[in-house]
Image 1 (tube, rainbow, N blue to C red):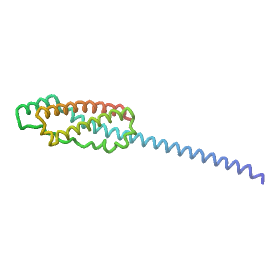
Image 2 (image 1 turned 90 degrees about the vertical axis):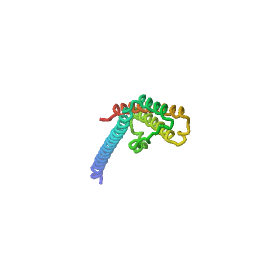
Image 3 (image 1 turned 135 degrees about the horizontal axis):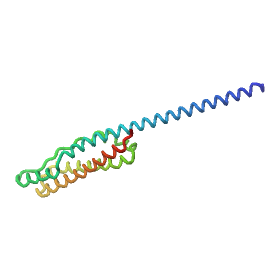
Length: 174
């Protein structure tokens, strides 16, 4: 009986070591695959956010806001019945789709993107205030002052969009 105990213990020990090595290799491969999936998700999120912000930045930059204000002020001065009207802002599709997972992005990207989105929300709120029927009940001077403030918010929004776009570009995973 003692003759087979030694080889059986050695075989069990070797089998255990092989199993341990296989488990470790599988664990490392899973971690590597998870890391690669996470990096791909981060890259995809950054590409999508950058595209959305660049699209909006192109729109924001297409206006000379000082000239726009001068034209609106001229309308107010020359037409007693004139009251500025604003279209609704386009939906923020990409950001709304990923907002619950924004935490996976690098910290250097999250801050400027959130600042940009917050400013966009402020502009959206002001847009709705100007679109509201109560706006037309305000004095013409007050309407014009609100519109000037609205354009000032656009300038800040454009600045935040530029910073967010640069942060997304700099934080891009290659």
